[in-house]
Length: 127
Image: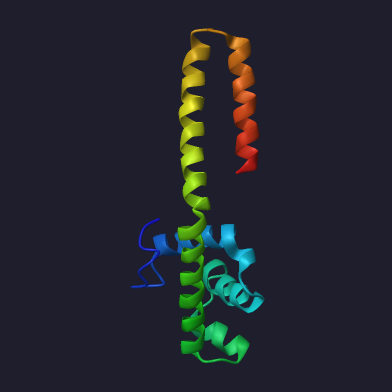
């Protein structure tokens, strides 16, 4: 993930994508209030002012909550590395799928290759 640890701008599109992925993975570990504010900003694309008005808190309070939540999510990833492992698994699956497709063209051990392909589909469902 790029730039997720440096909060130069909470409006950077790539940062928001990275944060959404972190939230999808670790969001349930957050307190409800953190989840709600973070969801409003990152997933619902509400402005800091809109969130502040809805919650009866200052714009700065919303910003601080988002920054703290972002740091927490990044900390979870640094400790658990679930997204990193998922990305590596995805890359491996793609490489195996390409090899399978190439081997199937050569009609080598087609039955075994089809079983392997089924296993890969099962792995994808786990991700």
